Amino acid sequence: MSTMDSGADADADLATVAASAAAPGALKAGMQAPLFVLPDSAGQAVSLEKLLREGPVLLHFYRGAWCTYGEQSLADFGATYEEVAAMGAQALAISPDRRAGQPAPLRPVPDLYDEGLRVARSYGLVFPLPERLQARYRELGYAPGEGSHWLAPLPAVYLLDRDGMVVLALLELNYRNRFNPEPLLHALRAIQSRRTTRPRLF
Image (tube, rainbow, N blue to C red; front, side, top):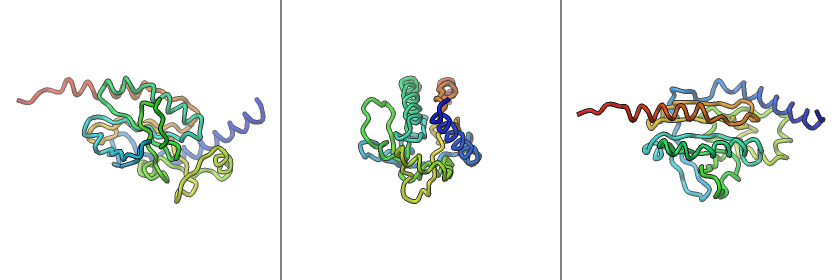
């Protein structure tokens, strides 16, 4: 293993430990999801409350375009979009990276800009970035935003039912891990099954 690889592994391990300490405070299944309004790539306001009126919503909190692992996670998440949409759900990607607001026509999932990690904070998805990592993250292009005091985002995927309740919460403490869609799709199928088998009231 090269010195560069060893350094990258050590940095990732340090970030994982810091994220693990913050994870207990993250929003969990069975909780009510905080509502929000964020701008998309066209500068249009996207309201979670309005989307929930139409059906379940998936929220993918990722690190941003500055992180190759974050970009890969977003690509993996986007690859499930057709299957997600076929089950009547909508999906949103959320990042504190300003570049998340730039047009990306090949991405099926709207990319929302969470300035200063405001929404991520309300979901408990932030942790103090260890001082040793701050210079490296800055070199990579991470800008934590005004008032964030070097907080970093904790990658996560949430499935919300149309009442805004968290049905499934998937936290990824190690940002290098690939996104696994199976638990998410399984939970979506369960929601769809409940809708189709619900008895009619006459």
